[in-house]
Amino acid sequence: MPATLSFCFLLFALIFIPTPVKGHYQVTSSGQPVVAAPGDDVILQCLVEPQLDMVDMTVEWSRPDAKRRPKGMEYVHLYRDNHEVEDMKSSSYHNRTALFAGGLRHGNISLIVTNVTTADEGEYKCFIPKLQGNTKSSIVRLVVAQNSSKTITSETQLDPEAKGQNVLNVCPAPAALFLLLLSGSY
Image (cartoon, rainbow, N blue to C red; front, side, top):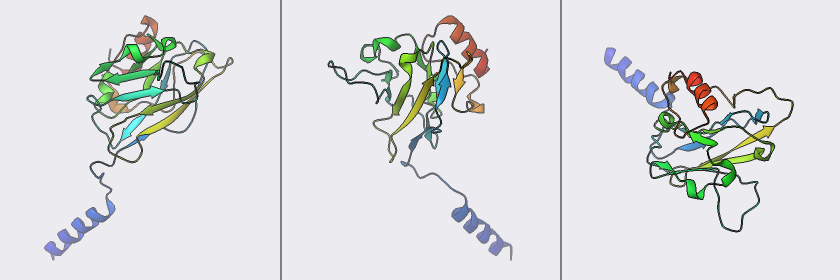
């Protein structure tokens, strides 16, 4: 009788407990817009599910709704070969974007944008070109409203296991201090 019970439990676990299939990853976001006031710092949340170490992958953040520039693709943020690629970044985002360094190991490819302006309003695309899966990108919408209160904004609360994550770029001092306090890595 115990062997039958063990077999039934194993069969139940195999059928009803979802297990990710290796190579079937997807880039996700909540689909809800991020609302901010001019001057706010925001987090545009984007995750790879199930969790995947993204440290050695390319992470591209771009503006699909922005007009194409004659000199080719410009990124909001480009992470390649374990570092940010500044020379392919749009000049309006220099020293204003960052990824969570510790978060990359857990599939957190969320983008921090500091000191948002009305020109930042629109769609942002996070894209992983070499991700093995059907959904390699996701769109996050940023709405910049004059009457919003000045606060850091995120689509959803950051992963509770994200404590101790460092920001993978230099942010202006007040924003960096606030982000460190927010993540609990002080």
